[in-house]
Image (cartoon, rainbow, N blue to C red; front, side, top):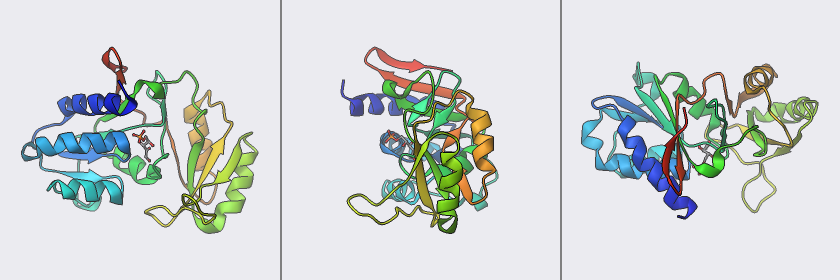
Length: 224
Ligand code: 5RP
């Protein structure tokens, strides 16, 4: 099976976690996109969605699925999203698709987090994937110096094929920190959150995945 077929299989199996009559939080990225396409087939069963990015909102609306502003919603039954890396405890690196801040916000108000990923995302130690950190633009250089002190190599994310900084849906910039061996994800999340100028860090450890569905060539495997 190709990586896309694995993502599609896992997205299909996540439909079992959709709660009828409720609001569903929807993540960002290629696996989340496959999930949106599956959700469209049962859209009559749900009340609506909250999206973790403008791209996700546009895809949901393109399928005729209602998208609520988070401020209009008091509870989200389940949040379904991909990951760049996940460990056996359900801690994740996210933000490869630049949506980490809104993903973290939507996840924080959801009763359950279901991570959907192809099997290649499962790791023993997080950090091979460069850790994304969203910052306010004026704090970029100061935050990069602090992140370098952690032993990683921080690098400003740029627009594809250009030298200009990539700008998130929130008007922030992204620093990707390579070379970290994250043995205590919750502690590092706390530490980076305390750096002034950081909007959010793409470590999802304090609120990790409650369930992880991994697409493998032997079928979909449930991790936690
Ligand atoms: C976006 C994310 C995505 O979940 C992550 O990048 C995985 O993406 P994909 O499903 O395309 O492999 O965190 O900010």
